[in-house]
Length: 535
Image (cartoon, rainbow, N blue to C red; front, side, top):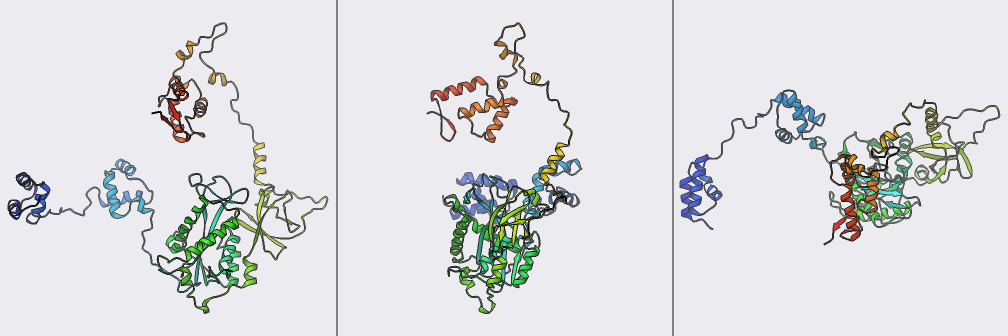
C-alpha cells in the first residue's frame, strides 16, 4: 500500500521531536489509524526525530578494570584457556566477568583463541627477478598414497589413515616439490623417503634438460631456498651444492609465508592425488610418469598471480643467465639407483656379487634380519648408501670382517636383545594368580550339595536381567544377527556399555523378541547392516 503526500506530512508533524516511549505511543496510534506497520511510521519520521545519543562511557570497558583484563588475557594468549573455564577461575580470584562478554572483548581486540593460532602479521610479496635465479624445494607425505606389497602404488581413504600416523603400516610415499620462484614452474616427484638422496634425485630430474619439449624448464639455479630441514643442512648436501655453485638459503622457523609458493603447490598437487581413487599404478615409476604428465598440463595454464603460463614465463629467460647442468658431474652427484637388501647376522649386505661389511654399531645392529633400502651410483661398485630411519650411511667396500682364532671380539647388542635380557633378569611380580575365579565368576544360584537345581532362583537372585550374559556374548550374538557392525562401531560400543552400567534399557527378553521379528521378516536387515521397520 503506497503512502500519500498528505499521510507523510501528517506523520512528520505528529512525530516531530519525539523520542523513547512518547515516540512509540504516537507511532502505534498513527499505524492503527493509517493501516500501516509501525516500522513504516518510524521510517518516514526518521528525518524529524532526534538521533540516538551516544553513551557518555562509550568505548570504556565497564566489565573489568584494565589491570584485571590484562591478567585474563595472559591466560588466554599464553595458556589458551577457554572463556567459560577462565571465568570460573577468575571468579575464585576475585574477578567477575561473563564468558560472553569476555569473548566479545577478545574478538574486538583480535585476541580470540582462534586468531591466536593465526599469524596476523602483514607481509610483503617477493619474487625472483628472472627464471632460475631462485628455486624453492620442500617435501611432504603424500596424503593417500602407499606402496603395496607387490610394488604397486595404491590409495587409502583419509578416514582409514592420517598422513602422519601408522595406518596400514605400508611404506608411505613422500612428495618432493621444486618450483622456480619467478616463472612458477613446478616440478614434483614421488619417493620412498625424505632423505638426502631423495632430494638430490628430485633436483637431478628437474635440472637436467628433458628429452621432450613439453617441459622446457631446466638448468641450475643461483639460490636454493627451503626451510630448516635436516636434509638441506646435511654436510653432503651442502658440499654437493657448493660444488655445483648453488647457494643454499633458509628461512626462519615458523615463517610459513616465506615459502607460500611451494606450500600452495602442494595444495595443487593434492588434486592429482584423487586419481588414485580410480587408478592403481603398477609401480613407483609409473606413478611419477603420470605426475610428470599432470605437471605439463598445470604449467601450461595461466597462473593466478602472474596471469602468464609458467612455461611461457620461463622461456623468457636470458640465455646469459641459463647455466646448463654439468652432465657427467651432475650425474655422479645426483643420479642414484635403488634396491632393498637383507642385513645378514654377521652385519653384511650383498651387492654386485660382493659382501659389504656394515659397522658393528647402532643403528645397524638393530636391523639384523631386516631388509633395508640401498642406493648406489651406477658407475661405482665400490660404494653404497644404506638408508635407515630416513638417514643415509655411506659404506665403502672392504673385505669381510673375519677375526682370527683366539681373537674373538664381542659385538654390540641390539636394543631388543638388551631389553629381553633385562626383562629375563627381573624378579617375577608377586601377583595373586589363583583363588579368585570362583569368587568373581561363580553363580549365586548354583545348587548346594544334595539340593536340586531351582531355575527360578536365576531370575530372583540376579540384580538385573541385563547382566545375565557377558558383554562378549551380547556383542557376538548381535553381530551374528546383523544388528551390530563387525567390528563393533564406537556408537554401538557406548550403547553396550550403557546397558551393562544400567544407563540403557535393553532386557534380554526384549532382545530375543527382536531376533524373532528379524526371523519372521517383520524387521528387515539391509545389506549395509542397517535395520529398518518393514512397511
